[in-house]
Image (cartoon, rainbow, N blue to C red; front, side):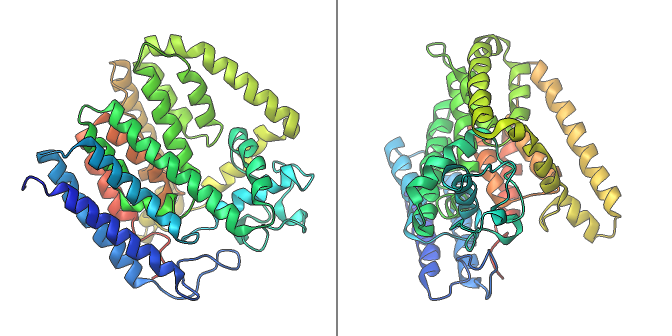
Length: 401
């Protein structure tokens, strides 16, 4: 691999992502969700540009393994790639408007997003924009995210545009933050930053789609970064916030605690204090309904997306129960193996994230927002290969073809 190829490759990734995002401004672009998320038309050129960007990204990673450019150049390119979708409208998903809807219920609608569905409050300005599948569902998100969504809903007012760009901007910033934190944790700093920050799929779905999974990835990486230093404490608080955005970080916390006994003792106090504070604030705001979010979440997890591996097994002719049983067995076996490694002092959180993605019946491409940074930070070759394969596999998901 020639020296000096990484920076031109990274610049080409940026150009391809920029061209792909520009397509969203065409009249009636199928890249922009409308009417409750329903899409008409196809976007083959967008898919081709994103696939090309991903291919160049892989070449860039190979070049970085051979000769890394200055860290400043890597960071500048990462920021350019992750921020360029901010110049496009909301892409490929209505989730940001769904966040806006639940935030409006608590901040302006006089309701409780854990007990009142959006359609029960017809004055909700997000109703025409949010995903139609979620209008009759209470929120599945944790109280840290729901409490944060309320002031964001006040900022957005009745503007779907402000709501979208608010969540897009937050996702872009947290995605870049996760890249920088991965670089801080990894031995090969530049490669880790590029592994996250130059990933075009993350850019399109985070700065493009505004998904809160970017928050989860950044919070987990921040907790790990604090755990890696003896100068600061408080990683337990960050774990609590990550878990109270979405519940999946609890799994990673268990593996991390098994491997890091010293960090576990240091984090205990901040974990308990923060958990009590967030739980108390949530109870004051939402009563005892917020822990019941686990039920709509479980119902959501029981649904199957077309890209989920259990669904693929069913397409091969396996009965639903058998496909799901294989997935559950694979998850339990994988976690048992990873727990054994963790007890020996090696918490392979990136590989654990890959195992979750391979076995969940509800698989979405934006779950890569916490998988990719974990893999980058740990520099686990097996996890890296598996993660990149998952990126390639999930690349077409949600793109209308």
